[in-house]
Length: 143
Image 1 (cartoon, rainbow, N blue to C red):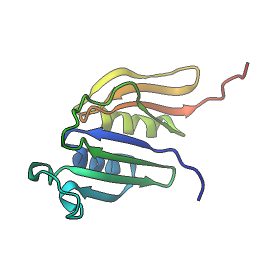
Image 2 (cartoon, rainbow, N blue to C red; image 1 turned 120 degrees about the horizontal axis):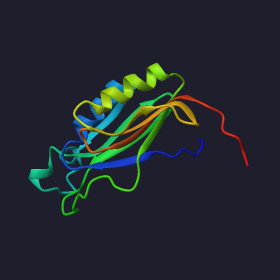
Image 3 (cartoon, one colour; image 1 turned 135 degrees about the vertical axis):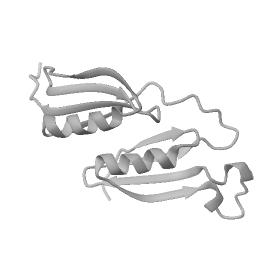
């Protein structure tokens, strides 16, 4: 097996909805959605957490994402200090995904031409996940 780096995101009770949405928007497959209630009996969990997601695994031919709802007793402060950056070969693909992520979310930086891509924009989706969406990447000069 080769080394893989994968973002693992935390949510506060809406992980299942977020991962199903990402699967649809990104053309990925939700391979695992395990709730705290699905855990083995030797790992007791408060009943009010049974419906929350302990582990989700989303797979695309080009990437994977993992996520879960914050475990019992762990305060959730939101996703901070990072964003998921995704690059599409075309502006049309980037625009479609950006608009889907922006629906119910907040556009931080509208799509616009940059020196590194034909288009780039930043959005925080309705689940609180920050995204940077690139379309039509350009070669950048090395110094």
